[in-house]
Length: 117
Image (cartoon, rainbow, N blue to C red; front, side, top):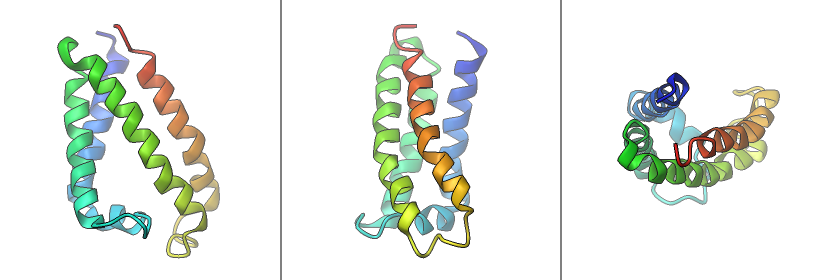
């Protein structure tokens, strides 16, 4: 298994744990139309940890990749909402918010790259 696949797995595991270490930061960017933001932060953190761990095993790698791509597609709603979210403006630089959109697609491609490995 290439080292950069382990890097991807570690990145998602770390990001998942951050949902529990800094939950307020994740709740702050949650769009208002998403119900139960506290629960969604919790479950998305769990999903990132599970998918990150699943990347490390050949038997679960492909479904983890599909899960990561789907998760990142859902997370696009958060990044798009951040562009017009008044609570975020002034706290996060706009260039960073705009950068996150293409970054999501880059992360999707990175995951897709490992299908069938």
